[in-house]
Image 1 (spheres, rainbow, N blue to C red):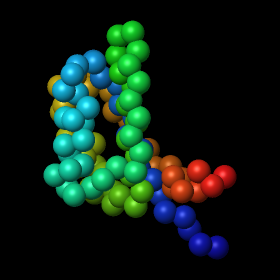
Image 2 (cartoon, one colour):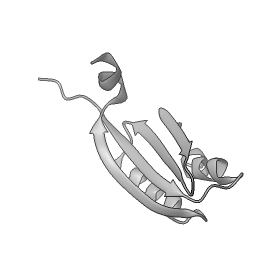
Image 3 (cartoon, rainbow, N blue to C red):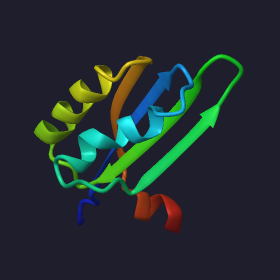
Image 4 (cartoon, rainbow, N blue to C red):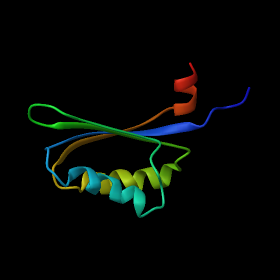
Length: 91
């Protein structure tokens, strides 16, 4: 049985601000990583953001998570491995 690649998923909550989304992408860009999925929704008092990357090494994911947690306005970050995005879309 072939193992499918894992996706690392970053789920964040943050205060809405005009410069928030570019600041969240900076930790990925400086490691030459392009997210495979990015979604942001603004609620009444905070934003919910999901960023996912296929085949991200655990050490790199930990560094990115640490950087995301330091972004001004981020109140929560949860990092979870998940089934690959390509398998989710096919199923």
